[in-house]
Length: 141
Image 1 (cartoon, rainbow, N blue to C red):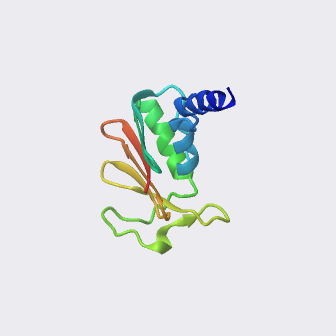
Image 2: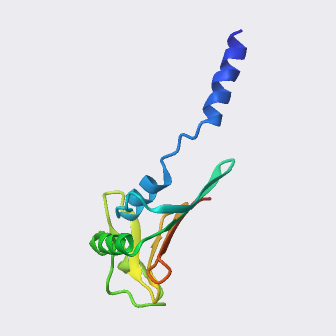
Image 3: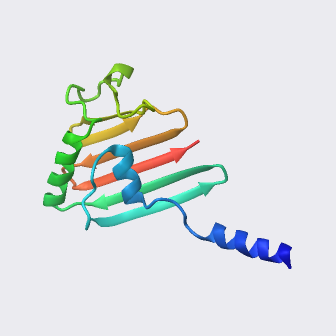
């Protein structure tokens, strides 16, 4: 009976999604506030045993896009000095905490991009201010 109960509890835990919701996750990691009522176009989580990937894509209204742009420019990671298509060098990253998380928001021809320089967790974000779409990706390898 004890063995059966352990299997039931373990199965229940596996079937539940215990991860932080994508909106919160990317707001925290990218040091921005994603507007509340955006249209979610894609919110996918793929588990690859010890690795995983998350894709979160949203459609923005013009007002929501302007809010997001303001949040990006206020982010500790925003570096207005980075030029489009410039190779991102270590000194361009800004540190957010004692963990020395290295990440950067910078302008592009279509909007803004975010990338990090972490050891095993990669983050990428793109805010297309022309098409009014934002895409956030995270993967652990």
